[in-house]
Image (cartoon, rainbow, N blue to C red; front, side, top):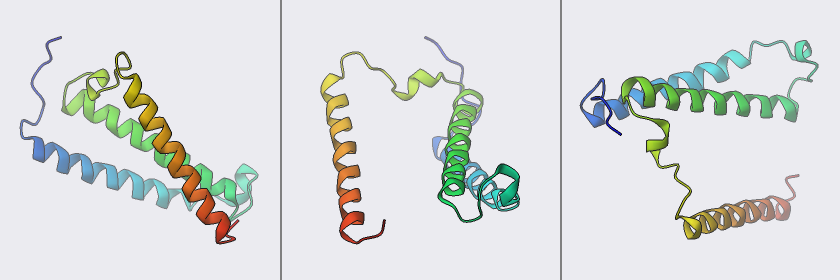
Length: 116
């Protein structure tokens, strides 16, 4: 699959530009969420649900910024990021197991510290 040349040829400059745009989107998105009146969504102020909504917004902005940069700036397909499943069963298992162990370790530390 032949792709066209990236919009910005220097890789380091693309990384810095992505970092600046990403940080701007994350901080501005988090800042703008403060101005949503708590009662407008049926959510109490300072509740766990509002925290999860902010995490979901940050996640969505992250995905959209990666998609935008991959298509517009890099001019490459999303699959060229390395999302290939075939032939990587051991790596998939290792990654899943590592994630599960990390989540379990963090949950155990939180439980031991009585933070729940």
